[in-house]
Length: 404
Ligand code: ATP
Ligand code: MG
Image (cartoon, rainbow, N blue to C red):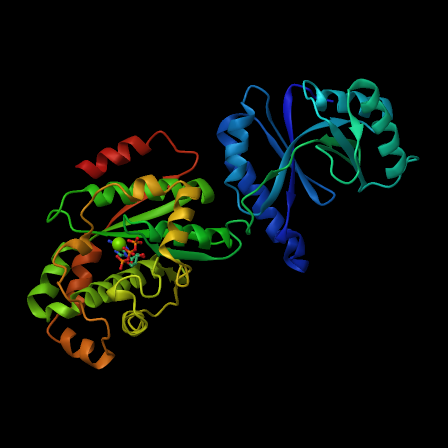
């Protein structure tokens, strides 16, 4: 047994149900776990009888491992574990190590055998180890409502012992659900929307529309920080920074004020649609939620999405603002999202935006604009940034590039 390393057992949930695609899902999960821990030193990820076994250097604090593992979609739960060979005396010693320094009023042993070619059964393991714990700790057995559960899992070649399960992020491993392009403002909603699609196994690249030099770079910095936060879950993100101020100015000068916001959105989607094709994305994602603002009425959403050749996914459509805010807090994007900035949509916003536009009206209004020229203008000025997790040292210089 190698005691100079952390051993971690990872259980996967929904993933276990994926039938014939299971190897694909497992492979993605293993690759992602490997990537999540890659900067912490030499480690391993190994598949064993319906669970995964990980190792990491012991010098890495458990809290850091926990934080990293918590970000990996597809993990139902994980536990720090102790391992022993198929030998009850050795298992007893491992149980003692697992319980070292703990006090608990009651406990139970939960034994499972994924490997059955052994002379001892689950009952016998539980009895022997239960007696051992009673001999070494001032405690009692409580099968129904124990304070502590000692899990013992017998797998080929070894026995795993663990006492605490940390709930994982759930969902499906990133990379199994296809590629998307998320429209990422500096606000609260869009990062949560991207997160929810990553949780369903998608790789979500992002696009941000900014109004520099009409406004300062604050929204770009926020979008970059948000993209980096999201990258912790998918390891690689492409961020497209699209100059949108000129497009907005042309819209402002050519169409009725009440239509501006719907037109801004239609041009954003048109541009995103082109970028998505370039990035190999199969759908767009927005943070729209029904009725939240004037541009998010059902009739306006319909008019807006009419310009996209790709499906527009809106994972927050039925969520309340309070629910979205709670989720933003939970995923760590809230603090960045609420930083003050002038989003491009605060520029030239009409006092009374139309809440019920129709496609013929909007299309007629757009006749006043040279759409191909506007798209070309925005696409030509688009800057591409790459975010990686773990972050590579050059990210600082990329940030500096943004300032230039
Ligand atoms: P958010 O909190 O995501 O900014 P919001 O409630 O402010 O959303 P809107 O400003 O109407 O709503 O934006 C709706 C959606 O359009 C956003 O969730 C986002 O997906 C997209 N979007 C809006 N502004 C931008 C932008 N500047 N860059 C990229 N996408 C944007
Ligand atoms: Mg916004």
